[in-house]
Image (cartoon, rainbow, N blue to C red; front, side, top):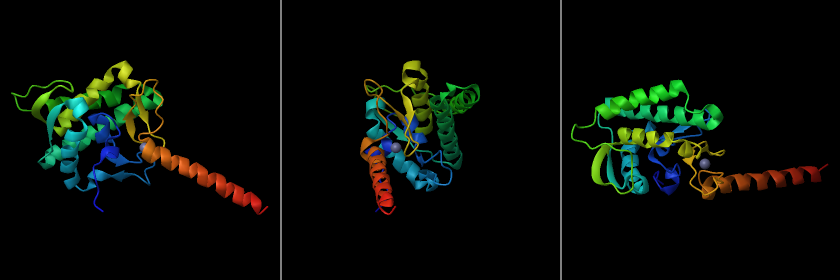
Amino acid sequence: MTFEWNAHRFSGGVLALDLANTVVFRESPERSLDRFSDPAEVTRFAAAAADFRQGEWGNVKFRPPLSEREITGLIDMREAINRLFRTAVHGGGLSPAPLSEFLRLGSKLVGDEPGDQALALPRPSRDGGRISLAAASFLSGVRLFEPLRLERIKVCPNCHWLYFDESRNRSRRWCDMNVCGNRAKARRYYDRNAKQMGSGHG
Ligand SMILES: [Zn+2]
């Protein structure tokens, strides 16, 4: 089965976090997995993101990186987004070093956009247009600075993805209840049974 950029892969809820989530298990380096280790996946991600992020971006197409330099720019932005918001979730707020790095890289990406490009923070009513995937991810991240948005970012305890919790009372515990929530439930069930079986032999 080929790898599919389905709804689950876009559990981040906003483009910036979806991009960071192209690496799985970020907090367990030995299990960590980078979906972009195959460069073809970057282009497939950009196409899928235009569909799954219409609620954030409207009818915008994301231009995938074309040159080696652009690919490096995208990966650097991805890592800067991850550091900035992961630090924030773990209680560091928007810390100076990752914030400065994020803005520095973003400034460069925005400067590389065509001069006639109308750049704006993402909005669902936007109709048409193209923007580089990296610059769009930067602008998506900038929108999260607002404190009421920042406090809705969480880390999934199962896969370590960052996600934006839009539930009314911020009660979402998993990036995706149907995947990570169920996996955790199955593990608890298995552990409990294993324990009971074990005690039966005592
Ligand atoms: Zn998860």
